[in-house]
Image (cartoon, rainbow, N blue to C red; front, side, top):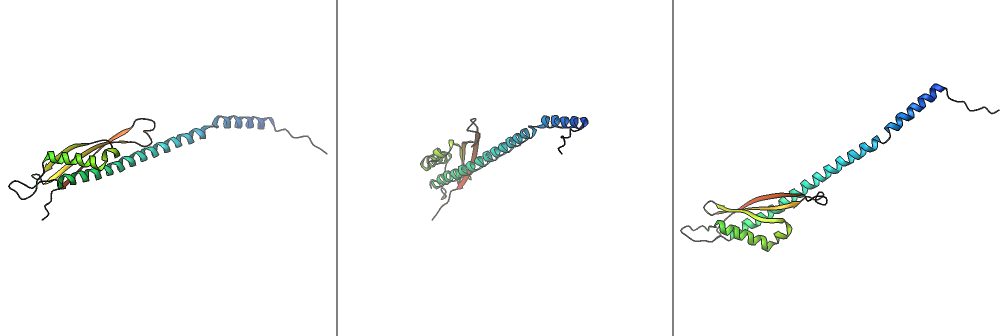
Length: 161
């Protein structure tokens, strides 16, 4: 014998309707939370990529500054009353700029230039400070984001006999 389907009690129907309404109000909140967390993660990745790019470019620029300071120290001329070769600030700047031009450093860095060139220890140490601009990798596709970097290197004049 077939029985008719039992209907829930009226108070059960009210609870079911309230539960459905509460669930409907909360629907989509987890999507907003996931999108917010995804945005935070992407921002962190962008910051880390930018910091890494600036650090790598600064190390490359330091290598170029080392080469420029060494070239300036090797161009020291012996003369005068002391037997030790000396270098002047003008020679340091000229040799550093010549080194950057011949090494192709201007093609590797944006707005590269010798910001300062000087000597110390009565012309026995050549100092070179280079400055350049680095584009941030992920941000520069959207915004023109650049970071200025500068490095300093020095080299001693040596006398080989």
